[in-house]
Length: 308
Ligand SMILES: Nc1ncnc2c1ncn2[C@@H]1O[C@H](COP(=O)(O)OP(=O)(O)O)[C@@H](O)[C@H]1O
Ligand SMILES: [Mg+2]
Image 1 (cartoon, rainbow, N blue to C red):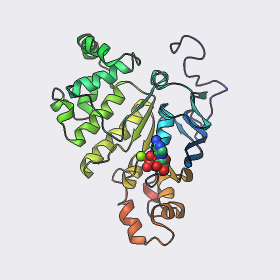
Image 2 (cartoon, rainbow, N blue to C red):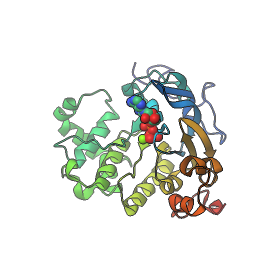
Image 3 (cartoon, rainbow, N blue to C red):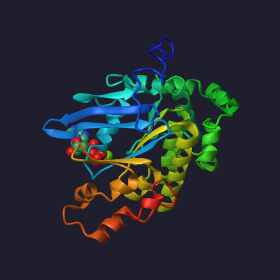
Image 4 (cartoon, rainbow, N blue to C red):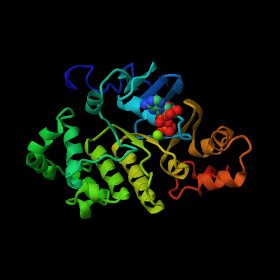
């Protein structure tokens, strides 16, 4: 069942089954009617939206809104009770994590998890190998490390391990243990590992949580340049609204598992629905402005309408 062995294997960009977004670009990732319940708790209720090629969609909402659950549904670690996930128009709702990785879905984690005793470079090499042999166990990687390293060194593409280490500012610490780095470095390592697999869809769960404003800006800049350069579809879950505004072409807001607003970042962030979700009905203007942060640092498509 390797990708590309049949007409079913490769993404069918021109195929009639591929849905087109409003912009006319094919949707890399599409959710329709996603519903997830945990016992009596409805974590997601009939959630539908798409992420197009070369687009970065921010998924925001208060704690418990269902953001991580939706990312789990996209990554294949949680099956929805209802609804469908599509990749290039093909249903992948029942596909395993490994199958999705093979199709180009990569994710980073809200809870940082690194392998003990492995260097920064080895983590990125692990991602590189994952893009080629998604179901190889860790010990398979360890026994092939020198061969993988040789192949990686000969790779001069923009998403090669060497290029990623340099682009994400990790060269200096490449041969140090990943577990001994600061939170900021570890988040970059996780991002580099995910990118090294050459994903077509990148799922990020709170990539700047625990980072300084300066480090968050670095992550933002890297994300903006990557999705433009590599035709990535990015779905980024973010609790930090200023960062969500910075890195999103479009924002989808969840509250109690339902989509309450979606559209241009400036519109969603200034919507009454979002105000109510985050601050209640009688939100003070100053509190809202303080939480949403200043206007975007990097001029985005919504920069001119940021004032309202
Ligand atoms: N494994 C689980 N078991 C039971 N309830 C869960 C589980 N995961 C999430 N939930 C519940 O589902 C809702 C959505 O959670 P989550 O997706 O983690 O929200 P967010 O990431 O937006 O903070 C919350 O009410 C949470 O308590
Ligand atoms: Mg979460």
